[in-house]
Length: 406
Image (cartoon, rainbow, N blue to C red):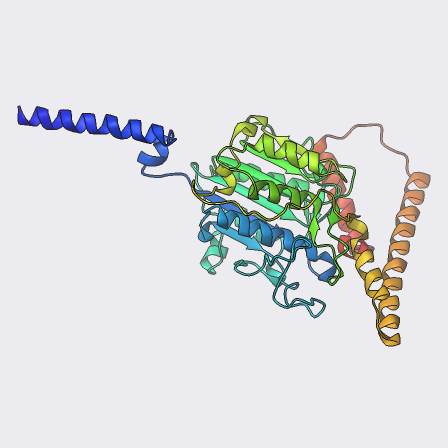
């Protein structure tokens, strides 16, 4: 009798506890009672370096602060950044990096796992695959499993079917093959990838399958550049942010990510990004999921930042002109004849190289169309990408790298 009474009391207590949890909005019982709860994993990559590319590292540093504020554990965040901006001789604010005109530092507190020469396509792909050798060398790699969600953000330069790191490129097929590998090894439940780069749509259009639990948005379609913004800071001769990156980061900062869906974020970023066409690829069923499943979310009682949100598309410049703009401003601000001479020489060198690159492309096109007949046989997308890689590898070896040409 006593045993039955105790069981009845325990049952009533459980019913009451469940009702209380329902009342405060807890409905995901597996997250409470599961012995192996899902985790968020985040990989943040700034692919470029040099002062003129300030904005790419600022994007990543701000993104890091957002996911940390959203309670993603530091040990689950892997960050790539050359780290040559905060203490750059050209930085008038030593040890600080800003992402907008208000000059709120986004650098302090950021943990960089791969810096300098370690920021490479090879290391990036190895991290995504959870490479054992990197881990044995005390480097962080993805250790995600089938219950975990993964968020990846890349900000840097790009061209058709590739994105650029410091001295090397990562091709569309290499990245998509790695995503397929991760899927086959059950390294995620769902994966979301945001990419800020010129022509970034070409990395996924007609390549990424729609049935692997992967959702991607890009800053531009396959035919256009991305844009930098906040390019007229009074003291910093560089664009402080990229338009698409700034827009998604602010959307994450100012919304409840337990409720904000991926589709809502995409729609808002597409609306507010006016200089390029934000695109989406992959499995569209994921759009109904909350952003917080990938970027973490605030505690229920945490207050929002009350600072004023900057207007959209502030002082934008196309990415291919951002470095020219930076050098032009340095020329205009030169205080001495010697500084003016140096600034002009550097600007002239860049303009001259740009002209040489265009002339080289023109010569190649003339030779190719004059002496070779186009094939009438259509190529599959995979064959097209492999052909492109072979041609570009020869071009970068004998002519220019994308870093030299951009």
